[in-house]
Length: 278
Length: 306
Image (cartoon, rainbow over all chains, first blue to last red; front, side):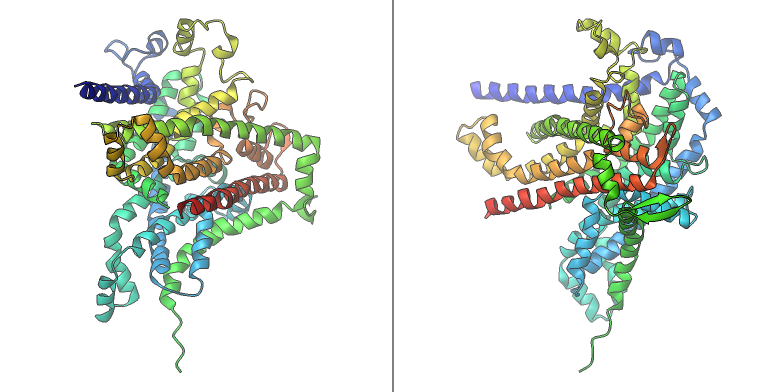
């Protein structure tokens, strides 16, 4: 009897601790979202109250669409992230397959060479990257960002995918080879077999690309190429005193990330754990 | 004997990734290192100065004062992450691994700030801590700190800004250690823990005798990832305090120092050579950490395991 009570108490304690921490996490996010739909008076008068019909206002969002090109910024982020992810996953899968499947002289060297990028942050090459982009007239283009993010994401992608390819049973590939399939054909046959791993790599590569401030700020700060994070940053700096607009900008920039997170959280969590197994 | 044909397919599979990675990561990194060994005189003419720039960074008062300031601030930033973020992340992971209903909901919620941009998180906290918004101030009043000047302007005060920003960063990034620890804890066979429970061991004992020893490798991974992330950080400081990392450079870390050196600030023009030198020092610091991890920690781990 005593045992059961102790157990119940323990479970309740765990829930209480996790609930308290979840509240600490959600409080600032909900506070911003909630207040972005209130008028200036209510934001300052009753910051903790949810919007009511009397205090409801979307003036902040209207300012946002009037002065800043958030649709454009969002589209830029979407293009950069999507193209980078396709390249990270596709080129990563090809290289990962080569390293896992074939024995050749430079195999270990290539694996180590690519793995270097997992540990060394690409930001430290910024001086060189900016000069390269200037020489190639790629400054203020989305292509510059795509190239950099692809290079940034490839090391981890190759590492994770080569481990997944190495775990595939050989029978299937051998059967295909006996049937006379080319190596390229075999690659297209095995690719669907590691589909969960491809999703995983895409999910963990997405966050740093979507959220980056450094490279948009340095390589593509023009109005036409601003990403949503840089756009929000600049806007927040200029409209410091228009709280409605600031809160609206924060909310609007958060929502796509949260939606993406909800869509991909399963792959993301699997990816974090798979990357850590090493 | 016929020579084996050249394995074209391997080249085709490997080349695209290797080329993109080499051109946009390795080559610029090497170019940047080379650049740190030169100085620009007159219009764009480069003169080789060896390690002169590094010597200047470490000895010339104009350079070494901000450098060491940024370095030690960065150390503080890292220490706060190591002593708060990682232990609390581990604690949350242990709670989540305890087989309770709804664990995935908590896990999803606690990870949410990690997926949001640092710019947004930093700014949201800046608003919440702002003396103009009636959230932080009434709370202080209730805690009896109503006239504490430091507490009123946490981000505007030299003695509190860096710690406050570190705590915001901990709040945001705690999801990563939590997930990594959770993944390691889940891999521990259930029978081990059940057997200990049957023997009458409490949660505390089970944690220190069974769970912790089995996840020690993850502790090392989390530590090195925290180190790399912290010594490469930039966004949070830039978004909340600007490139000047105010007040009076009290929140300046290596990333913001690098940015200012490279691009210039106020009346001082940017200096790409010195910027590359700062990046070179950052690379050195990070490599030192990685080598320490690989040879000091991971090798010892292997000895223990066998």
